[in-house]
Length: 376
Ligand SMILES: [Fe+2]
Ligand SMILES: [Fe+2]
Image (tube, rainbow, N blue to C red; front, side, top):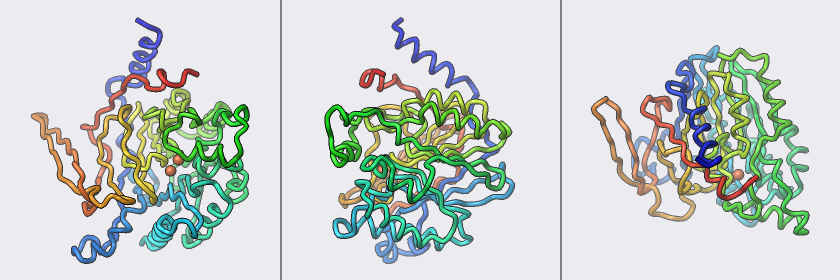
């Protein structure tokens, strides 16, 4: 058996121990926020669905001291207004809808990629738009916010990229998964704009495996959690998913195994991430990960990798008017296991996931794609 094969088997053995799953006493419900008028008639749907879905709300129940909601917006990818009004308008709409939530969300997390090319005017435009939201706001960076000036403007506006606070019995942690990219620009004498250009593409051939947490931040995370009871809930926000989904698009953090080591003792860990611009759900050991929608555009699902898809992407369409409608395949097995797979055609499909936690969700580990691409 090759060393690589042994490595893979070991990962699978460590992460796929029978019966090890996220603790069901922390239940996270994910809904796509739909304007109420969407539900009452086709005419109104036509009027409003162009804005839908724009934001993601989560209920945290049971393990928290009191149930509460918070809102997530990410991946607005703002250009200056003069270049692109679509993304601006969608961000404005999302901000208005968060502000209109009743009862209000306890806070808003902005999950990164506020700007498209990291420009001062793009970031400032984002701040201006999000002023509409009058509740507590916390921010983590995306790669689009960072690589023009290496986080200078972002830091001036939003402060530390990693942070923690406790809220109603839940420890929240914001991680910076974008700033530790390996230097591919100095040797090639790239300008900041050229560097940013490589970060702004989905295919990271030049930028390489830039997504990572970093040893220093892992140590910080460990310290941050050290005084937290291992059976109390932890919610971690990160721009990139904290597992290996698809490295060529940086749909991962390269040190996800180390992250898993730090988090393993905690039984109720939920990772909520952006960057993938699509509906995702995955479990590794006791950690569940939930991928959130972008307001700007949907990325396609990766052609291979973890996880096996268990939830459909709800397409937001930036241009394909045949995108997103469809039908569903429902598979009911003899063990009363029901698996639904949506085959989307178009977006006037109202999707609601009442509970992400279900015994029918499998976790599938595939061979590590990164091993064949970026030896490190
Ligand atoms: Fe993004
Ligand atoms: Fe991103």
